[in-house]
Image (cartoon, rainbow, N blue to C red):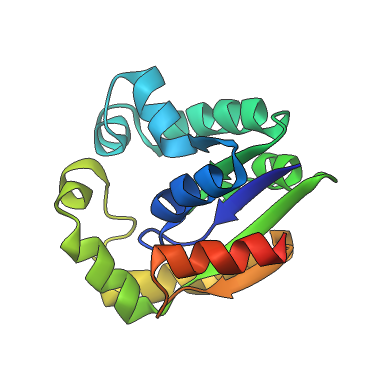
Length: 171
């Protein structure tokens, strides 16, 4: 069984995922990190130079590879499940899918506190990455997250360590 962590940018998928993998004695995979390594460019550069469709093709290839892994903790990008093919891979029997829910204002604060975000991640809409963008994107993405999840954890007021304890109990 592998555990997929899903949720919006800034919810803690990578931070929590690394800690969860350590606790479970499993390997950790960050889909976005694999894409960056494979492309030799940041996600922002892929979006700017090659376009979102090229990014989504790379993403789908990495998700297919991750779908066959056993005993891994896998962090997905925030928009990964918007593609039906990715959704099908992640929701196959034998996987646990944990939605890391987080309040939009907390997401904005976390994203703004990460200096690498602006340099490596593109804005997702013409709204420019602020609270309005997060709320608009969550309105679209949250139903998809919920359709894929096996469990949901509100991480708004949890430390990564606390989140790991809860997730370990869920799975």
